[in-house]
Structure formats: structure tokens, C-alpha cells
Length: 100
Image (cartoon, rainbow, N blue to C red; front, side, top):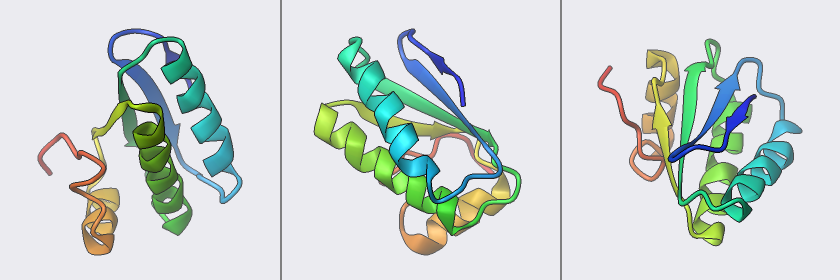
């Protein structure tokens, strides 16, 4: 994962996402928010084999963004990740951008 402190700030998430990635990603989002980011885009185009660990990390990012006053949205979700997020009811809260 790389971070750009631009407007909007960009996080890039790629496979494989492990269960331990959630806290690290949330810390990075918190750092971006403390640096002044008000909107954070999470580019998930690199999540080629989405599993529940990715869903968990993204939902934690959403909660962290909300707590820090940032707006989080996802960009370039692969169709499998989009389907998994829609199945779990997280597609809309996570602000999916692109059409499938």
C-alpha cells in the first residue's frame, strides 16, 4: 500500500490482504487525516482475489475515516470485490465509484 498526501489522498490496496492489515491501514488513514486530508480514495484495483480479510480491512477503514471526519470512497473495484461488498451490504457505505 502506498499513500499520496494530495487532495484527495489516495491509498492503494492490493492482494493479498491479511487479517493483520486492518490496523496498519487504519493507522495510515489516520496519518493522512492528521496531515489534512478530508477525502480519501482507496484504489482497490490490485485486490485480485478478494476474501473476507479485505472486506474486514475496508470496513475498518470506513469506520476510521468516519471517526477522523474524512470521506472514504473506493476506486476501480474488481468485479469479484464489488460482488463481495454488495453481498455484505458494504458497497454503498464504502462509496464504490466505478461501474462494473
